[in-house]
Image 1 (spheres, helix red, strand yellow):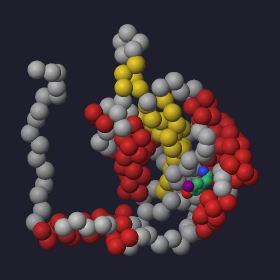
Image 2 (cartoon, rainbow, N blue to C red):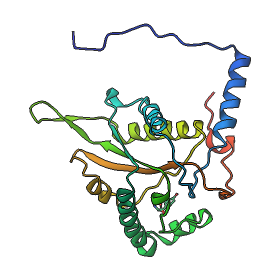
Image 3 (cartoon, rainbow, N blue to C red):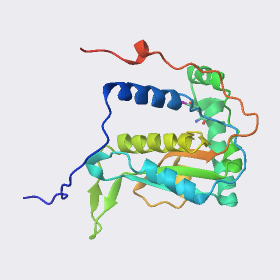
Image 4 (cartoon, protein in one colour):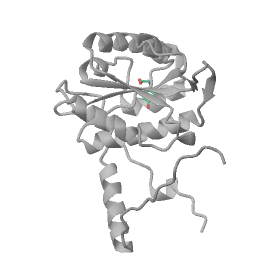
Length: 223
Ligand code: IYR
C-alpha cells in the first residue's frame, strides 16, 4: 500500500433547505459588497490580523495538497518604496506602449495609471508567490501540480478574508513581475503571482460604479 494520509471522520453543520437558501443568499449579498480599492489609509493593521488572513488563504484546496504558495508579508517602509519605484517603472513602460489600445480602453473606466502610491501608503503589502517546484532532501526537484489554479484559489480565499475583517485590498499585477522576486530575494522555485496592498480605505474613498454580470450571463444550465 502506498503511503497515504490517515483518514479521519469529517462532520459539519447541516442546514435545512430554507436555512441553506437564506445563508447562501446572505453570503452572496455580503460578498457582493467587496470592492477593489485603490486609495488606502496609512492607519496600521495588527500583524496578527494579517497572519490570520494569510492562514485563511492557505486553507484553499491545492493540487495534491502541495499548498504551492508563499505569502510575503511586507511592512518595511524602505522595501515598500523600492517596490513602488520598480513597479512604477514597469507600469510606465506598459501604459506607454506595452498594453494594446483595446486594453487601455478597457481600463479607462477604472481610472488606473502608472502611479502606484498605494504601495507606499497601505500598511501591508502581501506578495503572493507561486512555488513552481519544491527541492527534495537530495536537491532533487519535486513537482507541484496545477500551481496557478491552486495559488489563484488561495488568493481568492485571502481576499474574502480581508473583506471579512473589514479591510480592503487591491489585486495588483505589475507586469512583468520578475523585479519583485529579485527585490524580495526569493529562491529560484518561486515566481511572483500577485501584489496585494491591504489596509483601511482612505477617508472618503470612491470606487468606479461597476455592475456585476447577471445570473444569465455567468451560468449555463444543463439540467
Ligand atoms: N497592471 C496594470 C494595468 C491593469 C491591468 C488590469 I487587467 C487591471 O484590471 C487593472 C490595471 C496596473 O496595475 O495598473
